[in-house]
Image: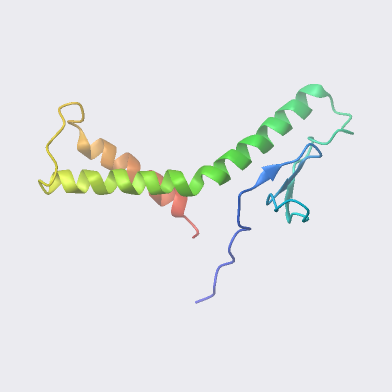
Amino acid sequence: MTQQAKHTPGPWRYTDGGIIDNAPPRGHAGVEIADVLGADTHDRRGPVLKQEARANAAFIVRACNSHDDLLAACKFALDSIASGKRGLLKPDPLYRDWATVEYQLSRAIALAEEGE
């Protein structure tokens, strides 16, 4: 079995020049992760594309930086549901459809862990 490469550790940040890097400590150079096409200040394709490219870069950074916390929260919620099913928690009348919640959390966890 081959070993899969790991991603660059975070937190990541987006710079005005269209570069996503790993937000190094002050005084150190970051490791470039991505160069967002259309986000640099010299792009001639217009302000709308530039704004969209910058918004995409910001979204990528937010998603990557929140991934671990969101995954942990999903796992905690799924474990809580399992505890409820085992009778360790009192049932909550607001969440009668545990199967749907369990399915959605399981799917989100699987997608987040895909390729890890």
